[in-house]
Length: 177
Image (tube, one colour):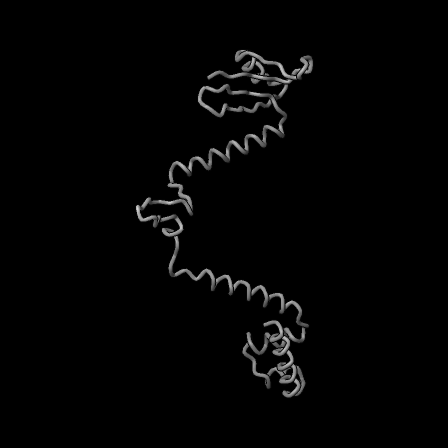
C-alpha cells in the first residue's frame, strides 16, 4: 500500500504538489506556518492512501467524522448487529424467523402509550385556549379539590354562577373530545 502526500502549491497547474514522506514530515514539524492534513485511505486493500493539505475548517470536519466513525466502530465490535427484518433462520417450510419476531414484545402497550400521548397533546392545546377565569375554575375544582360552594365564597359570587360557569367549561371541553 502506498501513500501520496499532496500540498497546496499555486505554481502548479492543478494547484497541488506531490511531495515525499520526508518533505511531508518537515512540513508538519514547521511551527511557524500551521498546516492541516486529511488522510483519505483507499477503499480496497492495496489502494493508495492520500494525505492532502486542507484548511482548518475542513480538517475539523474531517477529524470529527473520523472520531465519530471510530467511536461507532468501538461499539459494533462489542455488540451483535442484527437487521430488524432480515431472516435469522432458514426453515425449509418457508416460515423464517426475523429480527422483529425476536424483539417484538407481546405485552407491549405501544398503541395505548401513543394514544395517551396524542390525547395529552390535544388536552394541552385545548387548555391553552381557556381564559384565566376558566383555568382558575378548572384548577380549583379538579386539582385543588375545592368544592363549588367554597370556590364561590372565595370569589364572592353565588354557587349557581360557579355551577353555570363549570357547565359551560365542561361543554367547551367536550367539543374537543
